[in-house]
Image 1: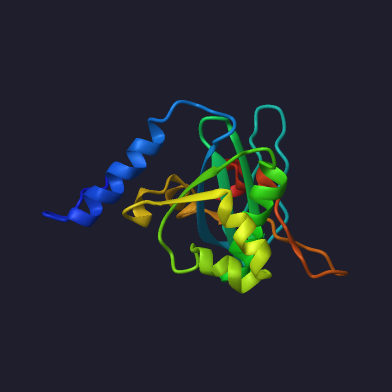
Image 2 (image 1 turned 180 degrees about the vertical axis):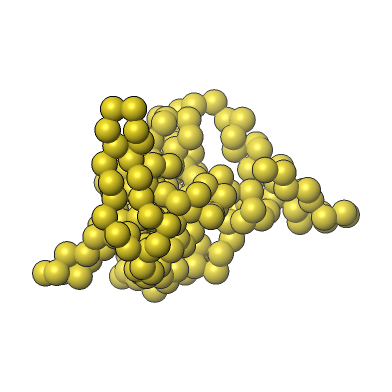
Length: 194
């Protein structure tokens, strides 16, 4: 994918140069670079059962499906470590983003001195969202371990384009908690309609 900057757009160039400088930093486990992005995908349920494959014949499924809601995916990934975490949320709300950032700092990289978080400048991607979700001392402690770097355009995110045009075929819901669960295998090409 190409993202052509608007002509004479100093803001775009400034933000892009900042992102490129971050990506040129030498690897340091104390200062990980983590990219973050969000996208929504339509969930579908098969209309008819699949016909399993046999030797010499591929699995078959019908084009008919039932709409099964929308899942909001939040992905954190460290491109220089080969690490990622994907969460499923109900919406783009600030508290859900804040919980993901808290897990990043406290569980995923608890020993990091500072985490550089590269993301688009969606209105929820700010320190204020941490203050909305947590007590001030928790929000401040999280911010002390974070450096926010904003991309000049959401179109530069690899995650945005990854699932566009694909529909998820399975969508599990626990009857006891009504919490949605995500299985990475559901996003592989064999489980997605292209």
